[in-house]
Image (tube, rainbow, N blue to C red; front, side):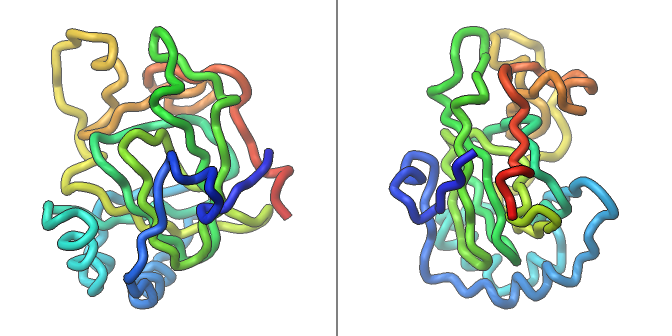
Length: 213
């Protein structure tokens, strides 16, 4: 699979790189968090990260003073498994290079189905501040090295990815709601599908392991 850079023009429909932020303090705090023995972990809000100066700057500048949370996704991953979206942008910052597997909401077809051949891969350099648009489908980052790992800060509106609201299903999109402000399309081979997530991805469950060095 070809891996683009977030500085390539191909990334423009999916998001943009934000400038004017100092990420050194945040990355140093992220590096203190121990990697899981296998797989990935995610926490929506982490106190030590939210004490960093950049937290207030992201809240006031990137989100226009909307209340936000700053957590992290970290571990090891090379597979797609699922795609999700929120009603707003997500901001990612990595301590080392990482890769995002992305698609567009307007690629979703009838019955909330999306062919994984619509997915593109983008490398994000360490320390860069990347906004992923609300209309961009995304999920867990991938490490950029075959035997590598990732630590990626995740900024979102406060409360995102927490408990799933109890709702009456009244339309087809309601079936995708997986957590607070989180709608999910799962690949049938994913653990999430086995836990009852809506199966909306078909084609190969992309694995970029062979594309890494």
